[in-house]
Amino acid sequence: MDKNTIISLKDIVVEFDGESVLRHINLDIHNHEFVTLLGPSGCGKTTTLRIIGGFVAPKSGDVFFDGKKINDLPPYKREVNTVFQKYALFPNLNVYENIAFGLRLKKVPDEEIRERVFEMLDLVNMRGFERKDVNLLSGGQQQRVAIARALINKPQVLLLDEPLGALDLKLRKEMQIELKKIQRETKITFIYVTHDQEEALTMSDTVVVMRAGQIQQIGTPIDIYNEPINAFVADFIGESNIIDGVMKKDYLVNFAGRDFDCVDFGFEENENVDVVIRPEDIKISAPEKGQITGKVESIIFKGVHYEIVVIDGNGFNWKIHSTLYEEPGREVGLSVIPDDIHIMHKMTEEEK
Amino acid sequence: MIKSRYPAFPYIIFMAIFIVVPLIMVAYFAFTTSSGEFTMQNIIRVGDYVPVIIKSLFLAFIATLICLALGYPFAYIMARKTSNIRRTMFMLIMLPMWMNFLLRTYSWMTILENNGLLNRFLGIFGIGPFEMINTQGAVVLGMVYDYLPFMIVPLYTIMMKMDHSLIQAAQDLGANPLQVFLHVTLPQSLPGISTGITMVFIPSVSTFIISKMLGGGSELMIGDLIEMQFSSNSYNPNLGSAISFILMIIILICMSVMNQFDSDKVEKEGRMVV
Image (cartoon, rainbow over all chains, first blue to last red; front, side, top):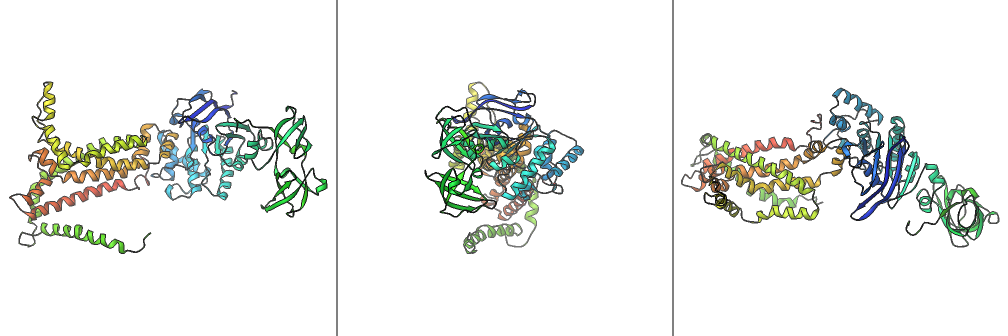
């Protein structure tokens, strides 16, 4: 464990009613990092967050905070604060008192509380709302109060449990940018839980992709997107074409009825693999110029690009993103450069 | 939603006949003589019974306080149990209510009597006998026993509805268990406390069966006083109405004081009380 590590999970196992929710989670989180736990619902990402917050006790495994084991430390003694999914603002207190809550408990002098509450109100752009009733605020405003309330304690780590889930798309995008800004300004470690891959890619320094209580891949957004470790990650992070292939030898893979040059190596000879190709990496050309030929099945306008489905000779549906219109029913050629062909080991039955 | 106002008519008529008219009659009797002339004499005569009224209020207050002290932790614990245990506990609370009220109070008589069950049991160990029946303590005990469920049920209901994420939020912000209780659980359960107090205090202050059976007539309460004006030799419905009228006003004042706590506005404007 390097000294930059603030939180460390060691072999965490959690079971609810005999059902395993987390299976041997190992995770190191560094100081000042924006880490996102990403995965479909039920993958254990929220449970992981609650382990760190102290609201769930692991069946086995250890939680370290700043090098100290904190397994048995109750939530109120942990130096982390949480922004809850449904904000959980105190309905009987106004905006000012909600934000001041943590400091009041610590018996901080009124003058200092005042100063720090206004500092927080400025940080979350809520100056002027201090006397408002929290029940009368909009979702976005309640969220800002919840963030201010958690940050005023100057925690080393802020836990955010799908904080933008209840907001509409436009507000969500604004808040993403704002959260990232707040994180950069305060230099607090953010651990952010979401099932929205775009949100994860936009904000994070590190993305942790989870599935069925296990960590699939840890990496920067660019790593995760460009070099997904398996077909699940590839499929979950953005759209992908996933097709069965056979690794003939190093740098040569066979799929869609022909051999392709690729950049991957180290597989067994004739190993069955998943071949993953992003829709935007496939180029459409005249049939004779393409590596694969097929017929345009459908085309949908998506704003920035068209989403085109092409069926090849083997009946595989290729998803392609292109800025150019293609007439449905037309024969076209498809080609892809070796760099954009991603080869992955097949997931074993147990992993599925 | 039914927009029409007609479905409300039967209830309005019912309330008019059985609630509003009797109230007017009570007021009428309170301010008239037996021959129907206006007088303040009845109201003034209530002044003779001020000690009884004060004692009634005091005993009802004590009983309500004990009910709250017993009922609050009970409801709190019950709301945190699994649904099976909750159902069983709720059932046990309600079970005595299925028995007749008089019967329940009678059973306490046989327990508390000078040669009743309790004294005989203590006698085995050479303790007592104690003078338990016909005391104020016995009356309060009866009130607590009879009205405790009325305290527990509204408290339990409000605690079941309580937002658990608020408790976690408070813990997360550094509140220890006591602080969580003071700043989250207690403020949220105030409406239940206020309902429970109302439901226990009102029947306690106006009871006459309990005080008669367990107080043995020596511990006269307002309820007994009113009952006497209507049923015994000293038949005087005008005085009875006047006492009832005063009692109603006292309860009204008590309730409006209580309602101050009920409102959501508590603390909202001011600072949190630490």
